[in-house]
Length: 577
Image 1 (cartoon, rainbow, N blue to C red):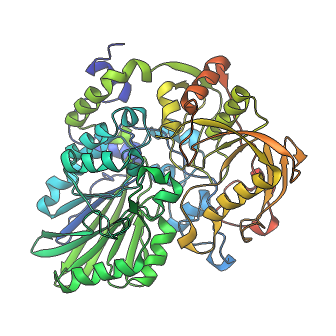
Image 2: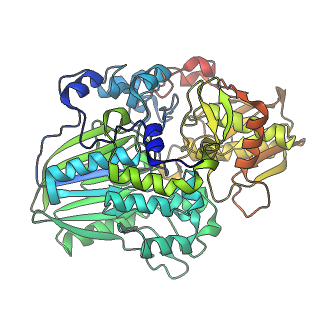
Image 3: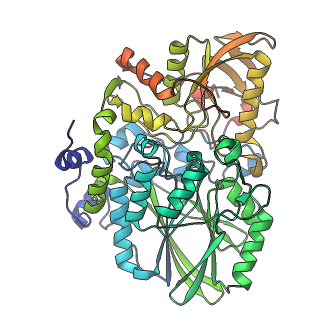
Protein backbone atom coordinates (compact mmCIF):
# COMPACT_ATOMS: atom_id res chain seq x y z
CA UNK A 1 0.00 0.00 0.00
CA UNK A 2 1.41 3.37 -1.06
CA UNK A 3 -0.48 5.83 1.13
CA UNK A 4 -0.21 9.33 -0.32
CA UNK A 5 -0.44 12.47 1.78
CA UNK A 6 -3.86 13.16 0.19
CA UNK A 7 -5.07 9.68 1.21
CA UNK A 8 -3.66 10.16 4.69
CA UNK A 9 -5.37 13.51 5.15
CA UNK A 10 -8.63 11.98 3.96
CA UNK A 11 -8.33 9.22 6.56
CA UNK A 12 -7.73 11.81 9.26
CA UNK A 13 -10.64 13.93 8.05
CA UNK A 14 -8.35 16.91 7.58
CA UNK A 15 -9.35 19.81 5.37
CA UNK A 16 -5.74 20.89 5.10
CA UNK A 17 -6.46 24.44 6.17
CA UNK A 18 -4.70 26.34 8.88
CA UNK A 19 -6.26 28.23 11.76
CA UNK A 20 -9.46 27.45 13.63
CA UNK A 21 -12.99 26.85 12.55
CA UNK A 22 -15.01 29.96 11.91
CA UNK A 23 -17.00 31.24 14.90
CA UNK A 24 -20.21 30.20 13.15
CA UNK A 25 -18.96 26.65 12.59
CA UNK A 26 -17.75 26.39 16.16
CA UNK A 27 -21.04 27.68 17.51
CA UNK A 28 -22.93 25.17 15.39
CA UNK A 29 -20.80 22.25 16.59
CA UNK A 30 -20.46 23.32 20.22
CA UNK A 31 -23.94 24.69 20.74
CA UNK A 32 -22.84 28.12 21.92
CA UNK A 33 -22.23 31.46 20.31
CA UNK A 34 -18.51 31.66 21.00
CA UNK A 35 -15.29 29.88 20.15
CA UNK A 36 -14.69 27.45 23.07
CA UNK A 37 -10.95 27.61 22.49
CA UNK A 38 -10.81 31.37 22.92
CA UNK A 39 -9.02 31.98 26.22
CA UNK A 40 -8.61 35.53 27.59
CA UNK A 41 -5.03 36.47 28.33
CA UNK A 42 -4.23 36.85 32.01
CA UNK A 43 -1.13 37.24 34.13
CA UNK A 44 2.53 36.89 33.23
CA UNK A 45 3.07 33.09 33.03
CA UNK A 46 1.11 30.47 31.04
CA UNK A 47 1.55 26.75 31.67
CA UNK A 48 0.38 24.32 28.97
CA UNK A 49 0.17 20.67 30.03
CA UNK A 50 -0.36 17.36 28.22
CA UNK A 51 0.26 13.88 29.57
CA UNK A 52 -0.22 10.16 28.90
CA UNK A 53 -0.67 10.48 25.15
CA UNK A 54 0.53 6.87 24.86
CA UNK A 55 2.09 7.34 21.45
CA UNK A 56 -1.20 8.07 19.69
CA UNK A 57 -0.16 10.38 16.88
CA UNK A 58 -3.63 10.18 15.31
CA UNK A 59 -7.02 10.96 16.88
CA UNK A 60 -8.72 8.01 18.60
CA UNK A 61 -11.95 7.06 20.31
CA UNK A 62 -11.60 7.22 24.09
CA UNK A 63 -14.38 6.29 26.53
CA UNK A 64 -14.10 7.40 30.13
CA UNK A 65 -14.42 4.59 32.68
CA UNK A 66 -17.81 3.44 33.87
CA UNK A 67 -16.18 2.35 37.11
CA UNK A 68 -13.57 4.28 39.11
CA UNK A 69 -14.22 3.30 42.70
CA UNK A 70 -13.29 5.32 45.73
CA UNK A 71 -13.02 2.97 48.69
CA UNK A 72 -12.25 5.30 51.54
CA UNK A 73 -14.95 6.17 54.10
CA UNK A 74 -18.29 7.01 52.55
CA UNK A 75 -17.96 10.70 53.45
CA UNK A 76 -15.06 10.87 50.97
CA UNK A 77 -16.83 9.13 48.09
CA UNK A 78 -17.80 12.32 46.31
CA UNK A 79 -14.22 13.51 45.86
CA UNK A 80 -12.54 13.67 42.47
CA UNK A 81 -11.10 11.71 40.70
CA UNK A 82 -13.29 8.82 41.83
CA UNK A 83 -16.41 9.99 40.04
CA UNK A 84 -17.87 8.64 36.80
CA UNK A 85 -20.81 9.14 34.50
CA UNK A 86 -23.53 11.49 35.67
CA UNK A 87 -21.84 11.97 39.06
CA UNK A 88 -18.79 13.44 37.34
CA UNK A 89 -20.92 15.73 35.17
CA UNK A 90 -22.82 16.95 38.23
CA UNK A 91 -19.60 17.58 40.16
CA UNK A 92 -18.24 19.82 37.42
CA UNK A 93 -21.66 21.25 36.49
CA UNK A 94 -21.38 19.96 32.92
CA UNK A 95 -24.47 19.26 30.84
CA UNK A 96 -24.86 15.76 29.40
CA UNK A 97 -24.83 15.50 25.62
CA UNK A 98 -22.61 18.53 25.08
CA UNK A 99 -19.06 18.31 23.73
CA UNK A 100 -17.78 18.79 27.29
CA UNK A 101 -20.15 16.06 28.51
CA UNK A 102 -18.87 13.72 25.79
CA UNK A 103 -15.29 14.42 26.81
CA UNK A 104 -15.84 13.97 30.55
CA UNK A 105 -18.27 11.06 30.78
CA UNK A 106 -18.92 7.51 29.61
CA UNK A 107 -22.66 8.13 29.28
CA UNK A 108 -24.17 7.66 25.78
CA UNK A 109 -20.67 7.23 24.44
CA UNK A 110 -21.55 5.52 21.15
CA UNK A 111 -24.11 8.17 20.19
CA UNK A 112 -21.96 11.14 21.19
CA UNK A 113 -18.86 9.68 19.55
CA UNK A 114 -20.62 9.68 16.19
CA UNK A 115 -21.84 13.20 16.82
CA UNK A 116 -18.58 14.83 17.94
CA UNK A 117 -15.81 12.62 16.58
CA UNK A 118 -12.46 11.35 17.78
CA UNK A 119 -10.27 13.05 20.34
CA UNK A 120 -6.60 13.95 20.46
CA UNK A 121 -4.10 13.66 17.66
CA UNK A 122 -0.77 15.47 17.65
CA UNK A 123 -1.69 17.54 14.60
CA UNK A 124 -4.71 18.94 16.46
CA UNK A 125 -2.76 19.45 19.68
CA UNK A 126 -0.12 21.31 17.67
CA UNK A 127 -2.69 23.72 16.26
CA UNK A 128 -3.93 24.63 19.72
CA UNK A 129 -0.44 24.92 21.19
CA UNK A 130 0.66 27.21 18.33
CA UNK A 131 -2.43 29.33 18.76
CA UNK A 132 -1.74 29.90 22.43
CA UNK A 133 1.96 30.51 21.90
CA UNK A 134 1.08 33.17 19.34
CA UNK A 135 -1.30 34.71 21.87
CA UNK A 136 0.97 34.85 24.93
CA UNK A 137 4.42 34.70 23.34
CA UNK A 138 7.35 33.79 25.56
CA UNK A 139 5.09 33.56 28.61
CA UNK A 140 4.15 30.00 27.59
CA UNK A 141 5.82 26.87 29.03
CA UNK A 142 4.80 23.49 27.53
CA UNK A 143 5.13 20.52 29.89
CA UNK A 144 4.68 16.82 29.06
CA UNK A 145 3.82 14.53 31.97
CA UNK A 146 5.18 11.32 30.40
CA UNK A 147 3.89 8.06 28.95
CA UNK A 148 4.39 9.59 25.51
CA UNK A 149 6.67 6.91 24.06
CA UNK A 150 4.54 3.78 24.51
CA UNK A 151 1.19 2.53 23.28
CA UNK A 152 1.45 2.23 19.50
CA UNK A 153 3.06 0.01 16.89
CA UNK A 154 5.14 2.76 15.36
CA UNK A 155 6.53 3.86 18.71
CA UNK A 156 7.49 0.28 19.53
CA UNK A 157 9.00 -0.38 16.12
CA UNK A 158 10.97 2.89 16.02
CA UNK A 159 11.95 2.49 19.68
CA UNK A 160 10.15 5.74 20.48
CA UNK A 161 11.89 7.86 17.87
CA UNK A 162 8.63 8.72 16.11
CA UNK A 163 7.27 10.22 19.33
CA UNK A 164 10.44 12.15 20.07
CA UNK A 165 10.10 13.77 16.66
CA UNK A 166 6.51 14.79 17.44
CA UNK A 167 7.55 16.19 20.82
CA UNK A 168 10.26 18.23 19.15
CA UNK A 169 7.79 19.64 16.62
CA UNK A 170 5.55 20.68 19.51
CA UNK A 171 8.59 22.38 21.03
CA UNK A 172 8.00 20.87 24.45
CA UNK A 173 10.00 22.43 27.27
CA UNK A 174 9.98 19.77 30.02
CA UNK A 175 9.27 16.06 30.30
CA UNK A 176 9.10 13.24 32.88
CA UNK A 177 8.61 9.52 32.38
CA UNK A 178 7.22 6.09 33.18
CA UNK A 179 6.62 3.70 30.26
CA UNK A 180 9.57 5.40 28.59
CA UNK A 181 11.83 3.39 30.92
CA UNK A 182 10.58 0.08 29.46
CA UNK A 183 12.80 0.70 26.43
CA UNK A 184 15.74 0.18 28.79
CA UNK A 185 18.12 2.60 30.45
CA UNK A 186 20.54 2.75 27.49
CA UNK A 187 17.82 3.65 24.99
CA UNK A 188 16.31 6.25 27.32
CA UNK A 189 19.67 7.90 27.89
CA UNK A 190 20.45 7.91 24.16
CA UNK A 191 17.15 9.55 23.20
CA UNK A 192 17.33 12.12 25.97
CA UNK A 193 20.92 13.04 25.14
CA UNK A 194 20.88 12.94 21.36
CA UNK A 195 17.28 13.33 20.13
CA UNK A 196 14.82 14.95 22.52
CA UNK A 197 14.98 18.73 22.72
CA UNK A 198 12.85 19.02 25.88
CA UNK A 199 14.55 18.88 29.26
CA UNK A 200 13.95 15.62 31.15
CA UNK A 201 13.59 16.11 34.92
CA UNK A 202 13.28 13.63 37.81
CA UNK A 203 13.97 14.29 41.46
CA UNK A 204 13.12 10.71 42.42
CA UNK A 205 15.41 8.52 40.27
CA UNK A 206 18.80 7.58 41.73
CA UNK A 207 21.72 5.32 40.88
CA UNK A 208 22.28 2.00 42.66
CA UNK A 209 24.15 1.73 45.01
CA UNK A 210 25.51 5.28 45.26
CA UNK A 211 22.18 7.14 45.38
CA UNK A 212 23.31 9.81 42.98
CA UNK A 213 20.61 11.57 40.91
CA UNK A 214 20.32 10.10 37.41
CA UNK A 215 18.63 13.19 35.96
CA UNK A 216 18.48 16.86 36.84
CA UNK A 217 15.83 17.14 39.56
CA UNK A 218 14.59 20.57 38.52
CA UNK A 219 15.07 23.52 36.21
CA UNK A 220 14.67 27.23 36.78
CA UNK A 221 12.74 28.76 33.89
CA UNK A 222 12.86 32.55 33.74
CA UNK A 223 9.85 34.21 32.16
CA UNK A 224 8.39 37.71 32.43
CA UNK A 225 11.00 38.66 34.99
CA UNK A 226 9.94 35.77 37.24
CA UNK A 227 11.70 32.53 38.18
CA UNK A 228 9.56 29.42 37.69
CA UNK A 229 10.95 26.23 39.24
CA UNK A 230 9.91 23.02 37.44
CA UNK A 231 10.55 19.89 39.54
CA UNK A 232 10.22 16.49 37.84
CA UNK A 233 8.61 13.45 39.44
CA UNK A 234 8.76 10.29 37.32
CA UNK A 235 6.58 7.28 38.10
CA UNK A 236 7.79 6.11 41.52
CA UNK A 237 6.85 2.43 41.11
CA UNK A 238 8.50 1.83 37.72
CA UNK A 239 10.57 -1.26 38.71
CA UNK A 240 7.53 -2.76 40.50
CA UNK A 241 4.79 -2.11 37.95
CA UNK A 242 7.11 -2.91 35.04
CA UNK A 243 10.09 -5.28 34.77
CA UNK A 244 13.01 -4.13 36.91
CA UNK A 245 15.55 -5.58 34.46
CA UNK A 246 15.00 -2.61 32.13
CA UNK A 247 16.61 -0.23 34.66
CA UNK A 248 18.77 -2.49 36.87
CA UNK A 249 21.08 0.29 38.09
CA UNK A 250 18.38 2.85 38.90
CA UNK A 251 16.13 3.13 41.95
CA UNK A 252 12.78 4.91 42.05
CA UNK A 253 10.38 6.04 44.75
CA UNK A 254 8.04 8.82 45.85
CA UNK A 255 10.65 10.45 48.11
CA UNK A 256 8.52 13.20 49.67
CA UNK A 257 11.43 14.16 51.94
CA UNK A 258 13.72 14.74 48.99
CA UNK A 259 10.91 16.59 47.21
CA UNK A 260 10.70 18.95 50.19
CA UNK A 261 14.46 19.47 49.98
CA UNK A 262 14.18 20.31 46.27
CA UNK A 263 11.32 22.74 46.88
CA UNK A 264 13.29 24.46 49.63
CA UNK A 265 16.38 24.60 47.43
CA UNK A 266 14.42 26.20 44.60
CA UNK A 267 12.90 28.74 46.97
CA UNK A 268 15.95 29.58 49.06
CA UNK A 269 18.92 29.05 46.75
CA UNK A 270 17.38 30.11 43.44
CA UNK A 271 14.71 32.50 44.81
CA UNK A 272 11.97 30.84 42.76
CA UNK A 273 8.79 32.87 42.57
CA UNK A 274 6.68 29.85 41.57
CA UNK A 275 7.21 26.12 42.19
CA UNK A 276 5.58 23.66 39.78
CA UNK A 277 5.85 19.87 40.06
CA UNK A 278 5.56 17.98 36.78
CA UNK A 279 4.38 14.66 38.14
CA UNK A 280 3.70 11.12 37.01
CA UNK A 281 2.62 9.95 40.45
CA UNK A 282 -1.07 9.44 39.81
CA UNK A 283 -3.88 11.58 41.21
CA UNK A 284 -4.23 10.09 44.70
CA UNK A 285 -0.46 10.05 45.26
CA UNK A 286 -0.22 13.69 44.16
CA UNK A 287 -2.90 14.64 46.67
CA UNK A 288 -1.11 12.91 49.54
CA UNK A 289 2.27 14.34 48.54
CA UNK A 290 0.78 17.83 48.49
CA UNK A 291 -0.41 17.27 52.06
CA UNK A 292 3.16 16.45 53.16
CA UNK A 293 5.36 18.83 51.14
CA UNK A 294 5.13 22.56 51.72
CA UNK A 295 5.83 25.24 49.16
CA UNK A 296 4.50 23.63 45.95
CA UNK A 297 2.21 26.01 44.08
CA UNK A 298 0.96 23.68 41.33
CA UNK A 299 1.16 19.95 40.57
CA UNK A 300 0.61 19.05 36.93
CA UNK A 301 -0.20 15.36 37.28
CA UNK A 302 -0.54 12.26 35.15
CA UNK A 303 -0.29 8.46 35.10
CA UNK A 304 -3.77 7.43 36.27
CA UNK A 305 -5.48 9.02 33.24
CA UNK A 306 -7.84 10.93 35.49
CA UNK A 307 -9.89 13.93 34.52
CA UNK A 308 -9.35 16.57 37.20
CA UNK A 309 -10.91 19.59 35.55
CA UNK A 310 -12.41 21.94 34.69
CA UNK A 311 -11.55 23.02 38.23
CA UNK A 312 -8.34 22.05 40.05
CA UNK A 313 -8.19 20.36 43.44
CA UNK A 314 -6.67 22.35 46.29
CA UNK A 315 -4.68 20.49 48.97
CA UNK A 316 -3.27 22.86 51.57
CA UNK A 317 -2.04 25.65 49.30
CA UNK A 318 -1.22 23.44 46.30
CA UNK A 319 -3.34 23.38 43.15
CA UNK A 320 -3.51 19.89 41.58
CA UNK A 321 -4.72 18.78 38.17
CA UNK A 322 -4.48 15.64 36.05
CA UNK A 323 -4.86 15.95 32.28
CA UNK A 324 -6.49 12.71 31.12
CA UNK A 325 -4.88 10.61 28.37
CA UNK A 326 -4.48 9.99 24.62
CA UNK A 327 -4.22 13.72 23.97
CA UNK A 328 -7.82 14.19 25.06
CA UNK A 329 -7.21 17.45 26.90
CA UNK A 330 -4.80 20.34 26.91
CA UNK A 331 -4.66 22.05 30.31
CA UNK A 332 -3.85 25.73 30.53
CA UNK A 333 -2.95 27.70 33.65
CA UNK A 334 -2.66 31.47 33.29
CA UNK A 335 -0.84 32.82 36.32
CA UNK A 336 -0.18 36.17 37.94
CA UNK A 337 3.18 35.45 39.53
CA UNK A 338 4.53 38.04 41.94
CA UNK A 339 7.86 38.18 43.66
CA UNK A 340 8.00 34.96 45.65
CA UNK A 341 4.28 34.19 45.47
CA UNK A 342 1.34 33.33 43.25
CA UNK A 343 -1.06 36.26 43.26
CA UNK A 344 -3.80 34.79 41.09
CA UNK A 345 -4.66 32.20 38.47
CA UNK A 346 -7.12 31.17 35.76
CA UNK A 347 -7.51 27.56 34.65
CA UNK A 348 -8.86 26.19 31.36
CA UNK A 349 -9.43 22.51 30.59
CA UNK A 350 -9.62 22.22 26.81
CA UNK A 351 -10.91 19.02 25.16
CA UNK A 352 -9.08 18.17 21.93
CA UNK A 353 -12.10 17.24 19.81
CA UNK A 354 -10.48 16.68 16.45
CA UNK A 355 -13.52 17.61 14.34
CA UNK A 356 -13.42 21.08 15.86
CA UNK A 357 -9.70 21.82 15.53
CA UNK A 358 -8.04 21.80 12.11
CA UNK A 359 -4.82 19.84 11.92
CA UNK A 360 -1.47 21.58 11.80
CA UNK A 361 -0.03 20.93 8.30
CA UNK A 362 3.56 20.65 9.53
CA UNK A 363 2.61 17.95 12.04
CA UNK A 364 0.42 16.21 9.43
CA UNK A 365 3.40 15.94 7.09
CA UNK A 366 5.61 14.59 9.86
CA UNK A 367 3.07 11.97 10.98
CA UNK A 368 2.50 10.80 7.41
CA UNK A 369 6.25 10.48 6.82
CA UNK A 370 7.01 8.58 10.01
CA UNK A 371 4.10 6.16 9.53
CA UNK A 372 4.62 5.52 5.81
CA UNK A 373 7.05 2.57 6.13
CA UNK A 374 4.49 0.69 8.24
CA UNK A 375 1.25 1.74 6.54
CA UNK A 376 0.46 -1.58 4.85
CA UNK A 377 1.11 -3.65 7.96
CA UNK A 378 -0.88 -1.29 10.18
CA UNK A 379 -3.89 -1.30 7.85
CA UNK A 380 -4.36 -5.09 7.68
CA UNK A 381 -8.05 -5.83 8.40
CA UNK A 382 -8.57 -8.63 10.93
CA UNK A 383 -12.21 -8.68 12.06
CA UNK A 384 -15.27 -6.49 12.52
CA UNK A 385 -16.56 -5.68 15.99
CA UNK A 386 -20.31 -5.74 16.56
CA UNK A 387 -20.00 -4.10 19.98
CA UNK A 388 -18.12 -1.27 21.68
CA UNK A 389 -14.58 -2.30 22.58
CA UNK A 390 -12.93 -0.37 25.41
CA UNK A 391 -10.28 -0.99 28.05
CA UNK A 392 -10.35 1.72 30.69
CA UNK A 393 -12.39 0.56 33.68
CA UNK A 394 -11.59 -0.73 37.16
CA UNK A 395 -12.56 -4.23 36.03
CA UNK A 396 -12.82 -6.12 32.73
CA UNK A 397 -13.04 -3.89 29.68
CA UNK A 398 -14.50 -5.45 26.57
CA UNK A 399 -11.23 -5.17 24.62
CA UNK A 400 -9.43 -7.13 27.33
CA UNK A 401 -12.32 -9.57 27.42
CA UNK A 402 -11.70 -10.62 23.83
CA UNK A 403 -7.93 -10.69 24.44
CA UNK A 404 -8.61 -13.18 27.25
CA UNK A 405 -10.88 -15.18 24.93
CA UNK A 406 -8.10 -15.30 22.34
CA UNK A 407 -5.53 -16.43 24.89
CA UNK A 408 -7.73 -19.19 26.26
CA UNK A 409 -8.64 -20.58 22.86
CA UNK A 410 -5.26 -20.24 21.17
CA UNK A 411 -3.28 -21.53 24.17
CA UNK A 412 -5.87 -24.19 25.13
CA UNK A 413 -6.26 -22.94 28.70
CA UNK A 414 -9.21 -22.94 31.06
CA UNK A 415 -8.57 -19.37 32.23
CA UNK A 416 -6.63 -16.27 31.24
CA UNK A 417 -5.12 -13.15 32.77
CA UNK A 418 -4.55 -9.85 30.98
CA UNK A 419 -2.79 -6.90 32.65
CA UNK A 420 -4.93 -4.07 34.03
CA UNK A 421 -3.34 -1.44 31.79
CA UNK A 422 -5.14 1.91 31.56
CA UNK A 423 -3.88 2.69 28.05
CA UNK A 424 -5.57 1.31 24.94
CA UNK A 425 -8.21 3.16 22.93
CA UNK A 426 -11.71 2.14 21.78
CA UNK A 427 -13.38 0.75 18.68
CA UNK A 428 -17.01 1.55 17.87
CA UNK A 429 -19.59 -1.05 16.80
CA UNK A 430 -19.31 -1.81 13.10
CA UNK A 431 -15.66 -0.79 12.80
CA UNK A 432 -12.92 -3.01 11.42
CA UNK A 433 -10.22 -4.07 13.85
CA UNK A 434 -6.86 -3.68 12.13
CA UNK A 435 -3.35 -4.73 13.07
CA UNK A 436 -2.81 -1.17 14.26
CA UNK A 437 -5.69 -1.58 16.70
CA UNK A 438 -4.25 -4.83 18.01
CA UNK A 439 -0.94 -3.09 18.63
CA UNK A 440 -2.80 -0.20 20.25
CA UNK A 441 -3.80 -2.65 23.00
CA UNK A 442 -0.62 -4.73 23.25
CA UNK A 443 2.46 -2.73 22.19
CA UNK A 444 4.91 -3.30 25.03
CA UNK A 445 8.54 -4.41 25.13
CA UNK A 446 7.73 -7.56 27.12
CA UNK A 447 4.79 -9.05 25.16
CA UNK A 448 5.45 -12.79 25.44
CA UNK A 449 2.48 -15.05 26.21
CA UNK A 450 3.03 -17.69 28.86
CA UNK A 451 1.03 -20.62 30.18
CA UNK A 452 1.25 -21.18 33.92
CA UNK A 453 -0.27 -23.75 36.22
CA UNK A 454 -1.57 -21.97 39.31
CA UNK A 455 -3.03 -23.61 42.35
CA UNK A 456 -6.35 -22.20 43.46
CA UNK A 457 -4.56 -20.56 46.40
CA UNK A 458 -2.07 -18.94 44.03
CA UNK A 459 -4.86 -17.68 41.78
CA UNK A 460 -6.49 -15.94 44.71
CA UNK A 461 -3.18 -14.52 45.90
CA UNK A 462 -2.40 -13.01 42.49
CA UNK A 463 -5.79 -11.35 42.36
CA UNK A 464 -5.60 -10.11 45.95
CA UNK A 465 -2.18 -8.56 45.35
CA UNK A 466 -3.37 -6.71 42.25
CA UNK A 467 -6.53 -5.58 44.04
CA UNK A 468 -4.42 -4.11 46.83
CA UNK A 469 -2.44 -2.10 44.28
CA UNK A 470 -5.75 -0.55 43.20
CA UNK A 471 -7.73 -0.27 46.43
CA UNK A 472 -5.23 0.16 49.27
CA UNK A 473 -6.50 3.00 51.50
CA UNK A 474 -3.00 4.53 51.61
CA UNK A 475 -2.32 6.28 48.27
CA UNK A 476 1.40 5.55 48.58
CA UNK A 477 0.61 1.87 48.06
CA UNK A 478 -1.49 2.46 44.94
CA UNK A 479 0.39 1.91 41.69
CA UNK A 480 -2.24 3.32 39.39
CA UNK A 481 -3.43 0.48 37.16
CA UNK A 482 -6.78 -1.30 37.16
CA UNK A 483 -7.76 -4.78 38.34
CA UNK A 484 -6.21 -7.67 36.45
CA UNK A 485 -8.47 -8.74 33.60
CA UNK A 486 -9.74 -12.30 33.80
CA UNK A 487 -11.09 -14.82 31.33
CA UNK A 488 -13.48 -17.52 32.57
CA UNK A 489 -12.88 -16.48 36.20
CA UNK A 490 -15.72 -15.25 38.41
CA UNK A 491 -15.56 -13.72 41.89
CA UNK A 492 -17.17 -11.50 44.48
CA UNK A 493 -15.26 -8.43 45.62
CA UNK A 494 -15.38 -5.92 48.45
CA UNK A 495 -12.93 -3.16 47.47
CA UNK A 496 -13.25 -1.56 50.93
CA UNK A 497 -11.81 -4.63 52.67
CA UNK A 498 -8.12 -5.23 53.45
CA UNK A 499 -5.71 -7.45 51.52
CA UNK A 500 -6.56 -11.16 51.44
CA UNK A 501 -10.17 -10.33 52.36
CA UNK A 502 -11.38 -8.54 49.25
CA UNK A 503 -12.07 -11.57 47.04
CA UNK A 504 -14.51 -14.33 47.91
CA UNK A 505 -16.50 -16.97 46.02
CA UNK A 506 -13.69 -17.38 43.49
CA UNK A 507 -14.64 -19.63 40.59
CA UNK A 508 -13.19 -20.93 37.32
CA UNK A 509 -15.78 -21.81 34.71
CA UNK A 510 -18.49 -21.37 37.30
CA UNK A 511 -17.02 -23.95 39.68
CA UNK A 512 -15.64 -23.01 43.08
CA UNK A 513 -11.86 -22.87 43.10
CA UNK A 514 -10.10 -25.47 45.22
CA UNK A 515 -6.98 -24.24 46.98
CA UNK A 516 -4.79 -27.19 46.03
CA UNK A 517 -6.14 -27.87 42.55
CA UNK A 518 -4.05 -26.67 39.58
CA UNK A 519 -5.48 -24.46 36.85
CA UNK A 520 -3.94 -23.82 33.45
CA UNK A 521 -3.86 -20.06 32.86
CA UNK A 522 -2.60 -18.09 29.85
CA UNK A 523 -1.25 -14.58 30.38
CA UNK A 524 1.12 -11.93 29.08
CA UNK A 525 3.27 -9.08 30.39
CA UNK A 526 5.54 -11.23 32.60
CA UNK A 527 7.78 -9.35 35.03
CA UNK A 528 10.77 -11.64 34.40
CA UNK A 529 12.41 -12.47 31.05
CA UNK A 530 10.48 -15.33 29.43
CA UNK A 531 10.24 -17.08 26.09
CA UNK A 532 7.00 -17.00 24.16
CA UNK A 533 5.00 -15.70 21.23
CA UNK A 534 4.14 -11.98 21.32
CA UNK A 535 0.57 -11.42 22.41
CA UNK A 536 -0.22 -9.39 19.29
CA UNK A 537 0.50 -12.38 17.06
CA UNK A 538 -1.82 -14.60 19.05
CA UNK A 539 -4.56 -11.98 19.25
CA UNK A 540 -4.33 -11.20 15.51
CA UNK A 541 -4.45 -14.89 14.58
CA UNK A 542 -7.59 -15.36 16.66
CA UNK A 543 -9.28 -12.29 15.16
CA UNK A 544 -8.55 -13.48 11.61
CA UNK A 545 -10.24 -16.78 12.40
CA UNK A 546 -13.34 -15.11 13.87
CA UNK A 547 -14.01 -12.46 11.21
CA UNK A 548 -16.62 -10.93 13.54
CA UNK A 549 -16.41 -10.37 17.30
CA UNK A 550 -18.70 -9.10 20.02
CA UNK A 551 -18.05 -8.55 23.71
CA UNK A 552 -20.45 -7.41 26.39
CA UNK A 553 -19.13 -6.81 29.94
CA UNK A 554 -18.36 -10.29 31.25
CA UNK A 555 -16.41 -11.92 34.10
CA UNK A 556 -17.06 -8.79 36.15
CA UNK A 557 -17.03 -9.23 39.92
CA UNK A 558 -20.16 -9.21 42.00
CA UNK A 559 -19.62 -6.19 44.25
CA UNK A 560 -20.71 -6.32 47.86
CA UNK A 561 -23.67 -4.24 48.95
CA UNK A 562 -21.62 -1.61 50.77
CA UNK A 563 -20.60 -0.34 47.33
CA UNK A 564 -24.20 0.74 46.68
CA UNK A 565 -24.41 4.44 45.98
CA UNK A 566 -20.71 4.83 45.20
CA UNK A 567 -20.45 7.64 42.61
CA UNK A 568 -17.52 5.79 41.09
CA UNK A 569 -19.95 3.23 39.60
CA UNK A 570 -22.00 4.43 36.63
CA UNK A 571 -23.72 1.13 35.79
CA UNK A 572 -24.43 -0.70 39.10
CA UNK A 573 -26.46 -3.46 37.43
CA UNK A 574 -23.26 -4.76 35.82
CA UNK A 575 -22.06 -5.65 39.32
CA UNK A 576 -25.37 -7.01 40.68
CA UNK A 577 -25.80 -3.88 42.83
